[in-house]
Image 1 (cartoon, helix red, strand yellow):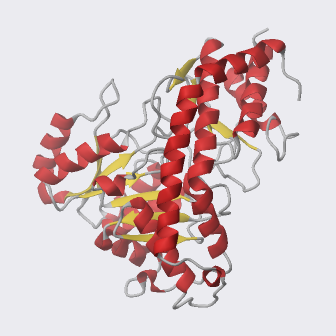
Image 2 (spheres, one colour; image 1 turned 30 degrees about the horizontal axis):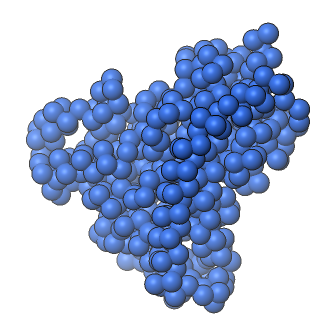
Image 3 (cartoon, helix red, strand yellow; image 1 turned 180 degrees about the horizontal axis):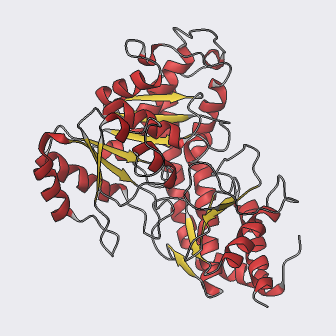
Length: 419
């Protein structure tokens, strides 16, 4: 793939400007890798734990130790890490249905959750499909302030008025398909402190997708009751081929486990079918792979800002997830961006992405993902709903070098469109 002199020179300029941030990202990756390796050592991980189990999967030592390691790394009391959780949305559904009961209120304090949760909650879709609303769970929402911070006064007032009905405060750490900033672990910690001061029995649940290993601590370490994510995003390191996790307090994880399997069985069963090794290996790679994705996102921010587009976050801002948004301003621009990412991918580079009515989304969505694992967004990918302001949400990159090629490919496609 040959890039124009203009873009080649722009990338070189970007890397010079980003050198200090790249060093910081490497330091975070080192600290997180050290934490992962300490947990492996503490729990005496051995190759006997990579063996497969079948049937009920009782006494699967590899599965049980992986969950102990995961809990330590995430600063949690307990964890569920399972290959048969099919996606982040599935993991979140397990957590929501595990904790919430008829008459309870799920209170989202960072605006509307990700699009695929709308039907799970019952704020979209048909009645009777089995949403939380169908089971008598109510939903309340407070948006972030214009500067992207929590509206603490409104949150505290709402919690006081709801009383014991406020069973769950829900926080989506990443922006999802919203044009807002990502929340830091420190900000989530302050939220937890304020929520618990008013309503100590309320569960604080965090959608942690895209945020793992970007900082040196996870939301469990600052008091979140349950933190949830997908293994084909950051924590699978590009190695795990499927799966999801829930980590947090022992009681929160226990309730989630009863939803995952059945009451009375919980986490005690579940054959691993030969998937343990890829999940262990993915966790080992995760800090490094996340660093590669972060560097790729920084490059994209610099390049597209230089090309005149509005980006969030900007190239010189601190990051708390791997997502880079670029406001393209038109359907044609968004499609050109995604098609450039597809062309710059290692798999299915010859495919032309088109917008389509993807299940679980209210708008047509265009998705580019030339990935070794279907839907893996720790690998180079870009997507966006076909609605104003036509924002491309870009993430991933198993290696910085391949991510750089993807960014320049997208920039070249967009540049050609504007000629």
